[in-house]
Image (cartoon, rainbow, N blue to C red; front, side, top):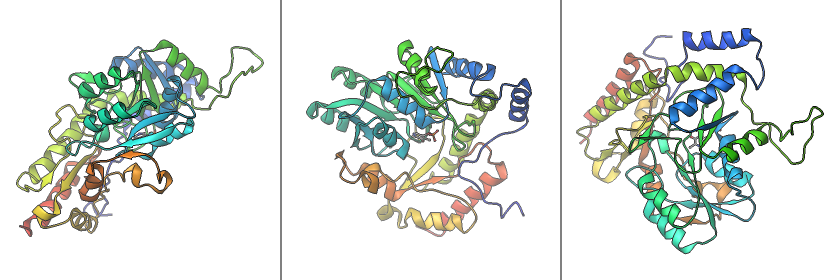
Length: 376
Ligand SMILES: *Cc1c(COP(=O)(O)O)cnc(C)c1O
């Protein structure tokens, strides 16, 4: 197919010769199991990168969130604060424990948990057992405000850093906030093991318990002894090898995504009604870049731009549909300001992958410029 016609993907995987080399070496080593030297090294290398002592590799980010919540003792009857603007996995992990998510709205400028709304919730609802924060689209939540607030009320924090590996907040890496954090290595994330995740924590007991539960809660006996229900959440050694190769390239991939964001910032620089949420965060990993368009000021709706790009084989995606609008969470308690609904309605995520070629980015930017050209 002609390069001009090939679909420009939102966030495709970025793998090459280094990944092939690592996976082939792991395969040849004979460690074709959810155990092996690449797994041990992958955990150590991620822990070192994020600056936390304990990392437990698992087969998804969702599993890491589930184990983190169990590690905090969250269970049936508990309420857990979840940002309404997130991917459904954040809320699902809460439900897996038997607890109930309580949805809280976001800061309209960043899309991350609104600390002011959170303060109100913690002040009035004494049944909140934990707070899950999300580093949305690769930009850290406002931990400078959220952590002291949660500390004041004695409520532990779990960080959903699935999208944010490599980002920082006031110099501190994503994945190092709260009692425990979860990373995702799903195929569309900043780096991938094709599917996988990691639980990070400073709490040695929490890490040991997560590791135990991830391996079917098997007690150290030859004859398969079990005294409680566990999960099959371990990551394959082959996939850990893929992760190790990706980690070598993480900084280069982040640089690429930042360069893509800079191109979008340039093409929208004179469109006053267009905002890049979190666009002024220099420590974001720029996993996905999106725009929010005020249709009244702009004179056009963001869906018109989406249609224009789709006709030119450019993939875009709406901002996550807020959890309180999802049929599965109908009737859930939600503390709302309207910010998440507005970002959902007026937002659009643009192709942001590190595997995008210069020519592909050019195609998208030219198509946007063409769209803007005919408008006020
Ligand atoms: C991707 C993602 C997850 C889940 O990760 P998986 O590895 O797909 O299970 C959780 N939370 C957020 C915010 C995500 O983007």
